[in-house]
Amino acid sequence: MSENGLVIVYTGGGKGKTTAALGMALRAVGHSKKVWMVQFIKGSWHYGEINSSKRLGPEFELSPAGKGFVGIIDDKLPREEHKKNAEEVLKICKENILSDKFDIVILDEVNYAINLNLINVNDVIDLIKIKPKRLDLVLTGNHAKNEIIELADLVTEMKEIKHPYKSGIKAKKGIDF
Ligand code: ATP
Ligand code: MG
Image (cartoon, rainbow, N blue to C red):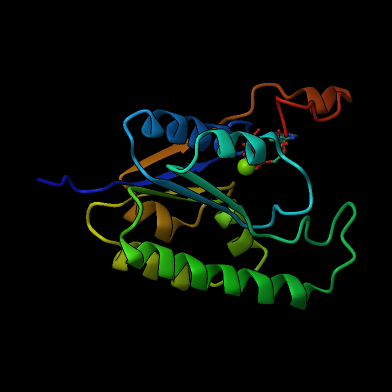
């Protein structure tokens, strides 16, 4: 008998949204569950989880599918490129979700992709609505849209109390990337 999957949202301004999703993946692989994590936006930096994911394979698959920061830091790409890419990623999400090959699908940073207008919130809502019943679907990124929150079963808002970034401490290997 298969249980109903959950729609899980990690949002808020504090740190820990992506790491919470990765922690869930680590736990799920321990039960031989198949997990696919796709990262919107991220793709140009080398995050530690790209290496770790290989050690958790074949149950865990990670696809850094973004083109890097949008409009900030080192971004030299036209917005249209980011948009085109994000829309393609969304198509792959739909295929993988409908394939029913996975127990958990994690759409990392998808809320940012929506807020940056790279993708349309309605297309993400469609994914939630068409997903196989048993699939657990995780969405991360700050400023989750209300429409998504309404459809979710579990929503956690990370609240920043302190962040070292605010006292000038740069992103740390193994902690932030
Ligand atoms: P993490 O990937 O560490 O779990 P996150 O997913 O909650 O963080 P994002 O909004 O995706 O955070 O931000 C990506 C990067 O920004 C990460 O390197 C993260 O450590 C850093 N970051 C997260 N929250 C803050 C904050 N409040 N102030 C400054 N930097 C932050
Ligand atoms: Mg994140």
